[in-house]
Amino acid sequence: MKVILLEDIKKLGKKGETISVSDGYAANYLIPRKLAVRSTEGNQAELAKANAKEEERQKVLYEEAKKVAARLESINVEFKAKVGSDGRMFGTVSPKQIEEEMFKQWGISIDKRKFIDKYPANAIGYTRLKIELYKGSQGEVDGIVNVHISEEK
Image (tube, rainbow, N blue to C red; front, side, top):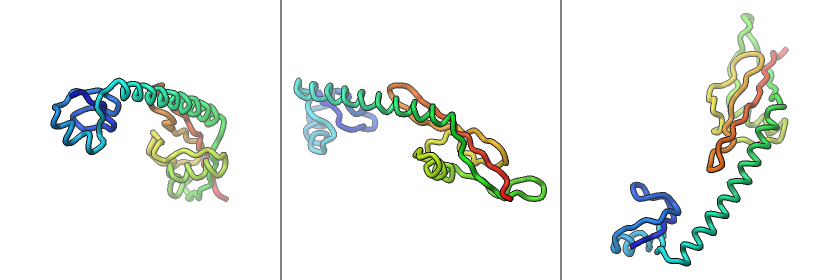
C-alpha cells in the first residue's frame, strides 16, 4: 500500500514522502496513529498545496533573516566589565547576556542557541561572533554581531 507520511519516521522516511509499505503495517499502525494517510489523488493534491505553502513561508523567513543580517553589520552591543591590575577582564560575557543586551539595546531577538561561536567574549575590546539566522531550503544566512567590552571605571 502506498502512503504519505505525516511525520518523520525513523528508518522509514521523512514527512511528506510517498512510500510503499505492507498493507497490515499501514492499516494497523501508521494510519490509526495518524503517522500516515493513504496515497490518493486528493491527498496528493493536499500535499502539493501544503508544500507550496511551506515553500512560501520559507521564502519569507529567508528574506527576514537577510534583513536582520544586514542590520547586525551596523550595530555594536556594548558591555562594561571589571578589569584586574594586569589588564585582564574578570569573568566573561556569555551568548545569553549578548542575546538579552541585543534585545534591550536594539530590539533584535535572537536565540542564544543560534550562536555558531559558542565561546564567550572574554577580552576587553571588540569581538565578532557568528550567528546562524536561517538554515533551510532557500540556503543559509549567517550574521555577525559586534560585541564591544569596555573597562568599567
